[in-house]
Image (cartoon, rainbow, N blue to C red):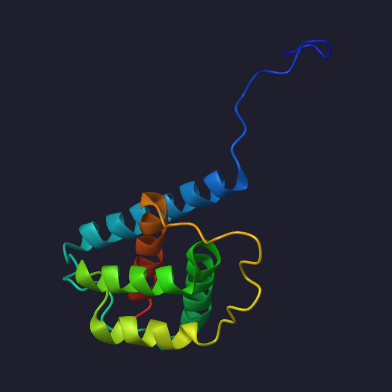
Length: 137
């Protein structure tokens, strides 16, 4: 047992974003494991249409808010097109997501800074959202 007078251990602290991304990756692994257990692997595109099930719209807004906040409107639109190119989304799903983007206001989102580019971790997070939405269909 540690004594009160012992110095604290040097354990690297994870940022909230690191913990969030780790949780998202774990969710993707759970979804992938469930799919593999059924033996019914999804065909591309993974998300044909946006689900109409309760709660799906919340997931869509959460995902798009993340993308727009991080990368801006233009880069979010580019990312959605990329997801269609790699067949994560169908053209119908991409178009529906772009329609949802109209609900976001671009005003004052980036007063001082230019939006960031999306990185590999951001695309993995997008795949988590796509898998989550596909599982709601």
